[in-house]
Length: 270
Image (tube, one colour):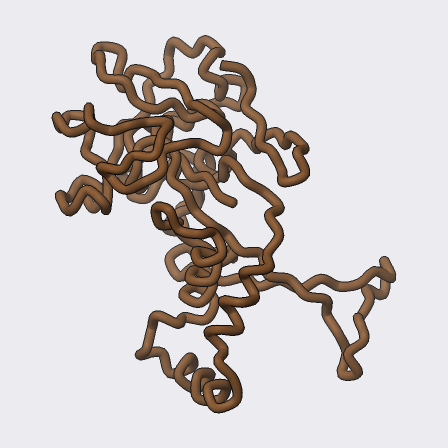
């Protein structure tokens, strides 16, 4: 397997960032590079020159980890069976999997497979970018690609007269964008979330923006209720948001550098 590339909407190939975040996670405010999401969970350290699976790395002993909430038995639509479950063999990789109600196709084409452990015959999806220091699903529901959508909402900063404000040094317009702050890490992020099977991208983007940026799903939030009262008597703000996302422009589609990624489960976004 050679170096994987990501493709922008204009066809330009973009090399991945060698999943820096999943090898140098800051989850739960723990800044040690090998922590995952618990104090007792460490990734096996992978040097940058050993990320590619084609590069020999005989001493590689990745940490096996799948979170308890992922292993908890619910419906098949929620999450995949684990490697030792007989149902694992029914998963249809690199395809639309109707049994589990999800799309297992990668934006980078068909992904390859690797033995879960050297002494086991079971094959699992192989991360298209390379080694992460962890095997299993970590905190991701699906083996292989887990699809998300991340809306980037921007506007030009304007003065009270409606004129675009410029930076005093560069003399260029100042671009503003919508961001949210994660409660558990206090890190800033673009609002977004998982895409439901078969869901149109505009619907995913609109839903996630309303939930994460506007807290629309939290009726107990006093600030949001105040916002709702202000705008509800003047316009249908929900319809405005839905219509807004119907006119979006795709700027990226591919592998997402995410601290949850493992050797066998990873995030992809558009």
